[in-house]
Length: 141
Image (cartoon, rainbow, N blue to C red):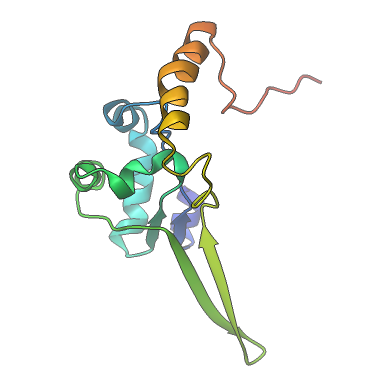
């Protein structure tokens, strides 16, 4: 992220970077300080868009989410369902739609059973057995 900030890239976070089904906001806030600090740099120069995913619907539907975002970033941050980038290539208008990809998926999008299972059954099970499928495996040569 330092490289992209140095090169003045625009950063669009496509969601699920904070696992809010398996973790409480206070835990996410504590363990992601470095990432949030990097994102703040993009935010400070108005080069940051945050899109919510199915595992961080909290940002979109919890009344306290706005307060949490101010705690993390030091200012209000709008959360979007998607973004449309528009440009021209060879005098042709091009529009690119960006979204997390699970919005509208009945298994993932606000499904109380899925959320309950992941947060109250799967996450404790993973923790107990020290399983983390969210981390890439270490390849041995």
